[in-house]
Image 1 (cartoon, protein in one colour):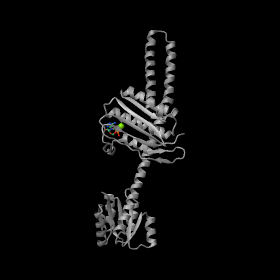
Image 2 (image 1 turned 90 degrees about the vertical axis):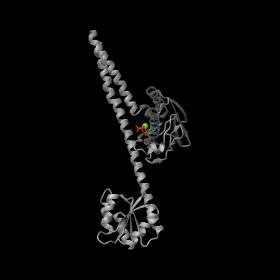
Image 3 (image 1 turned 135 degrees about the vertical axis):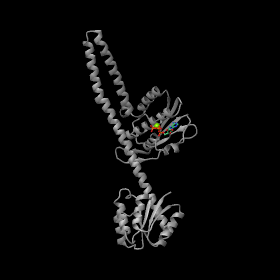
Image 4 (image 1 turned 90 degrees about the horizontal axis):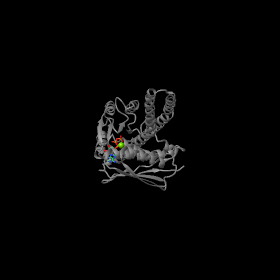
Length: 351
Ligand SMILES: Nc1ncnc2c1ncn2[C@@H]1O[C@H](COP(=O)(O)OP(=O)(O)OP(=O)(O)O)[C@@H](O)[C@H]1O
Ligand SMILES: [Mg+2]
């Protein structure tokens, strides 16, 4: 339930506003003077504040500027209610950071329209901020993975190759069987290290994704996935044997990777079906397994559903790298019956 704080010193007005809002299902916090209003705003963090201007003691302007100076209350939408609806008052309130102005006397419909309009705007703003933030997180994680993968492959890989050459030379120069044995052991350990470094680097960011694109990277991933988990992957695809924008290739690859890892972790099936197809200007992905299914809404609302959430984020936001604009498209994530399908639609622009 959304909570609205009403700060008003005239009892009749306070009562009317409170009744109108309560009848519409809002929870109302009442303050009959500025200081109490300020205290309630800090303690209760309401979703919106309606405040009178002319009040004895602390007036509405003082309440507003105090709220604006506090990082915890600065973003609460604030509407002034006043009978002194003169231009210079309105401007002063707006300059201080008020979001709206409601001249008294007002009708219940006017009050509700102002409150609803402001709450909707605030919720759109918060959604946009959250979306921007989660996109930046996903993006930063991908850049970090790419840089660690290339560091592993380049710097560490070079040192390990150097070590292998030195050990090979030492082996050729060795004069006795006793000297050969530890060198052979060292060489086999170095070979194992090379494999581990390569595996780690591919896990972080498959080089094939950047070099050859989505389809080859997926085929390579399916092979490794089956070896590691014994789960077979059936792929059906159409029109994806081409290069797309890097952001799209990354998003699609990560969505499939995460969904398959869920199949291996949360079901006991031995097979998963992946379908990827391109139609018009959208790439669609569907991953199915015939395990027990799960309640998607419940899973998504859990704070721990990082995997599902990041799939959703990647499908929702695909950044056009060249123009810097963002193509927004809500992913449709579904889960029905025994089959868990995750169809995602991502805007596409081939390069
Ligand atoms: N294919 C699936 N079959 C059954 N349950 C699933 C499947 N995919 C996801 N789930 C359920 O949804 C939950 C959330 O999945 P999500 O990928 O977000 O998190 P996770 O796999 O538990 O952890 P991580 O954040 O490491 O991926 C899982 O814990 C699981 O209960
Ligand atoms: Mg997961």
